[in-house]
Length: 149
Image 1 (cartoon, rainbow, N blue to C red):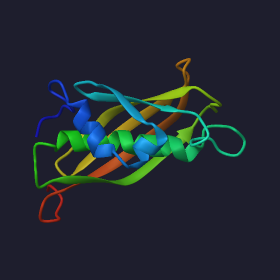
Image 2: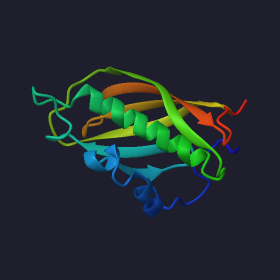
Image 3: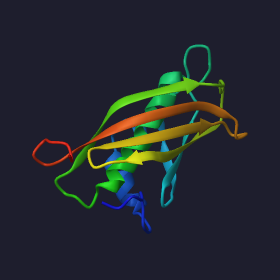
Image 4: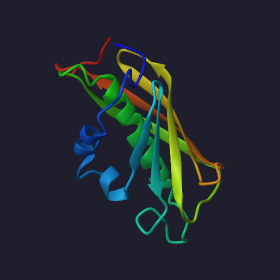
């Protein structure tokens, strides 16, 4: 398995097709950049993502983090038809509130193993100020239901 999310152009149409009807589509979470070892996505702060006080809901930041890390893991194993990935642990620290605009999440690998992927996701407001720092652990499941060893 290669250690890079993308070793060349990735088909954004395919990525949109995979997320059709999912939380990503509902929340308008858009992968904007696929780099060799990172993903960048944006999400609006609006009526779907705010909590009752009018701030970005912390849970939405965690959803964004899980979507980004899971997508990165999915892309890493896409060439293995009998393999799927599932998030098994996610958490984050909320550092700054956001009322409107779009937040941007940058996902980078901490460690890519055969059976587990570890990601860090930093989410910033439109002024580049860090709002949430999250980590995600993703399990890699082979066709027979076992981890990769």
